[in-house]
Amino acid sequence: MELDKMDENDWKYHGEGNKSLVVSHVQHARVLRLLKYSTEDAENSHKTTEQAFRHIQNIVDYSQNVMKPLLGEKFIHNGEAVKLPLDFVRQLSLKVQQERPESRCDKVMDTLSGCALCLPNLTQLSSCCCCSREHRPPLCIEIKPKCGFLPASRHITKDIKRKVCRFCMHQHFKLANGKWKRLSHYCPLDLFSGNKQRMSLAIKHLIEEPQNNFNIFKGGECIYTCNDDADVLQDLDELAQHLRPYFLPSGSLLSRQQSSKVVLNELIQVIVSALLSTWDCPRSGQLRKTHLSEGRVTCEASLLHRDLLRNGNHCLPKDCVLDKILSTQMLDNLDIEGLSPLFKRVEQHLQMFPKERCRLQMDGPYNASFLEKVQNCPAEDDGSIEYAVGKVHQYRVAMTAKDCSIMVAIATCGEDDGLDQSLEIQPTKPRFTCSVSILDLDPKPYESISHQSRLDYKIVNHYLRRTQPNN
Ligand code: ATP
Ligand code: ZN
Ligand code: MG
Ligand code: MG
Image 1 (cartoon, rainbow, N blue to C red):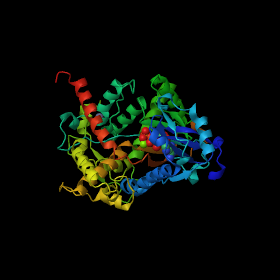
Image 2 (image 1 turned 135 degrees about the vertical axis):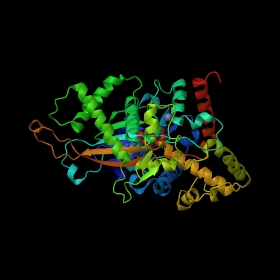
Image 3 (image 1 turned 90 degrees about the horizontal axis):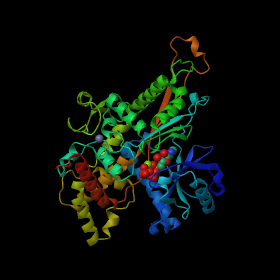
Image 4 (image 1 turned 180 degrees about the vertical axis):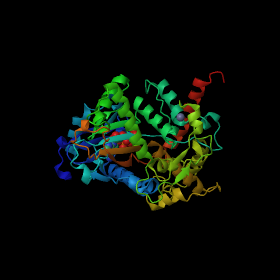
C-alpha cells in the first residue's frame, strides 16, 4: 500500500462498530479502521494529527503487548498505525456515507487527523495452496461472544447476578430503552460451556437474532447481519441459499425447506468445532474443567432445557479460542462492585500525587511492564496502591476480552469439485479449512470504570423490577 498514492475508488465500506468505521480494499486483503467521534465531542474533533496517531499506536501496542500474550499468538494479527492523505480520507468519508446504517450515524468518521489502523482483512482467509484453485469464495463468521461467566465475587450485593448472566439481563434493559425491538435468546454461558449441544443452540439463537453479536461474510462481503425490521424466516431462507453450495453436494435432491435446515445445521457444526479446536497445539485434547464450581456455569435466563443444562459436561479444551477469551475475561474476579472502592483508592492517590499517573501507567504505555502489572498483581488486598492499580488494570483487560469479536474463516478445499454427484450413492461433503482470529482489542479507558458502575446498577435493578415486580 503506497500511502502517497491512495485512491478512494480502491476502497469500499466494510462495517462499523461504536468506535470505528472499517473500509476494505477492493483487491488486496486489507482493511483500514478509522476512528469515529460523536458530533458533540469537541475534544476528539480537535485532536491533532500527532495525538490521533499516538492514540492509534496505543491500540496497536495494547493489542500486541498485552492482549496477544494473554489470548495467544495464533489468534491475533498485528496492525499498523498509518497516516493517510487528508484529501483521500475526506473523499472516502463522502463515498461511504450512504452505505452506513442509520443507527450508526450519530457519530462521524474522523476526517481531520488522517490517521487510521491498517489490518489484514480477516474475512478473506489468506489463500493456502489447496484453496487457490477453489471457486467458492471463503465464508467468515463473526461472533461477539460477550461475557461468558457468572461473577462469584463476595462483593456482589444482588443475588440475581450470581444466577442470571449480564448479557441476558442487559437484553431486557436494551429492549426497554428501544435499542432493540426483539429479545435475543442467545446466552454466552451456553456458548462458553464447551458442551456441543449447548453451543449449537447458542449459535442457533445468534443466527435467529444476530443484533450486533453475529455477522456472516462471503468473499469479504457481509451477507447476513442484524436487521431489526427483518422477516426472519425469509432472511434465513436467503442465508441458506448462500450456504447450500458449501454444505450440500451439488446433486442433492432435498427440497428447499429441508436443505435450509440441513445447511444451517452443518454451518453450526463447523463453527462449534472451530471454536473448540486447539489447532496444532501439543497439549490438545486436554480439557480444562470450567474455572467455576458446578452450578455457576448455567444462566437461569437461558432457554435451554434444564436436563441439558444439568447433564452437560462443562469443559473447554485448553487453549481453544473460547478458553483463552474466557480466562482473560475472568481477570475481572472482584466484579465492578468489588472494584469500585479500589478505583476510588486510585483516584484519591492520583489527586494527591498527579505525577504517579505516569509511573502507574494509568493510560499506558502498553508495554511489557504494563503486562507485568496485570499478571503479577497480589492475590490479596494489602492496602497498597499497587494492588488497587493491578486490579484496575486487570478489570480493563477483562473488559476488552468481554467486548472482542471472534472471526471464524472457512474455506472449502473439496476434492469433489466437478464430479458428477449423481454417480455417487453417498456423495462426499466438501471439506473445510478453518482459521480463527480475534479482533477489536482496544484498551478501555480508565475513566469508563465509573460509568460501568452506574450501568451495572441500572441493568440489575431494571431486571429485578421486570422479573420480580413484587419485591
Ligand atoms: P465495537 O462497537 O464492537 O467496540 P468497534 O467500533 O471497536 O466495535 P471493530 O469491532 O473493530 O470496531 O470493527 C467494526 C467491524 O468491522 C467489526 O465488527 C468487523 O465486522 C469489521 N472488521 C474490523 N476489523 C476487521 C478486520 N481486520 N478484518 C475484517 N473485518 C474487520
Ligand atoms: Zn445468560
Ligand atoms: Mg467490535
Ligand atoms: Mg471495540
